[in-house]
Length: 395
Image (cartoon, rainbow, N blue to C red; front, side, top):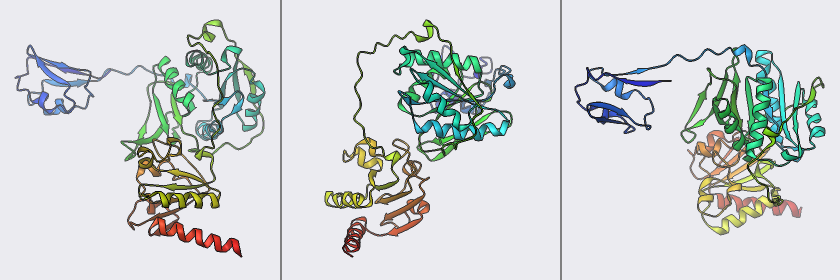
């Protein structure tokens, strides 16, 4: 582990390192330098010390035989056997990654009475579907699902584990990664494989202003979660794999979470599944214009979505939000009205097949992404579109 080493004999107690620390992590107590948990090992103190009384030492990383970790394991997200589409997207990406190193794609499915659903995954060319099936696993509970997941990894020793960034996936993945003292990169947008099986995990950082490349070179397995609608789904392939039933014991199945009852959640059409979207932003200020846009969305057979400011103002529910802190969408057509196009928004919709943007600012960033750019007032353009659609319907 990397750490700071303090040489008291060299120190003149000038306090420069304490003043220069950007995280206020250093203090001088009893003529010794104290380092708090706020230290980020940035090295500013090392560079600023005129007496070179501070140095940074890096411990040798343990040797890892990467040949002992093979293949890519995809966690199968499902609702009582109904497989979530994000699983097929992960399988498609896993095949692409595995082809670089000549390895296989495996799946793990946890639940009860799921063997028939697991068998359908063989249509997508996976080498194996591990099935952990038991009545105690019918509903997701983080502790016993983690125990089963960890056992599957010990059995197959995958180099990479891919999990959908769903509600349960975001709960499960970090718990399993912690069991193996390995890293996890959340909400990846791009995944690339190196020939030595190191996974390059790319995701937005600092509010989407940069794309960070993250590697976990000294530990296995490598965990990554991926949002729905970011990757292309897998295509059907010849069936060559098999379904394998895991042997479970009471220790794995035991849960400290007591399930009292279950209630079905009201079904809502997700904007992530919509083929046509009309998205509104900060530029839409009055309710009359918003009502006109809702009417336009209805005539287009589109769902209404928004950018973050409209959620924060209370005008839209959070499940209508597109962007880094909302949903990722991939429609055939998206019409944006009054949206400037900050990276936090565009990162959630830049894979749309056709983007039409309307904004009064000709330099709005959304126009850099749009296939059709319209400079103008969204209210007037909406009104004109409705008028022309009315005239067409009367013909």
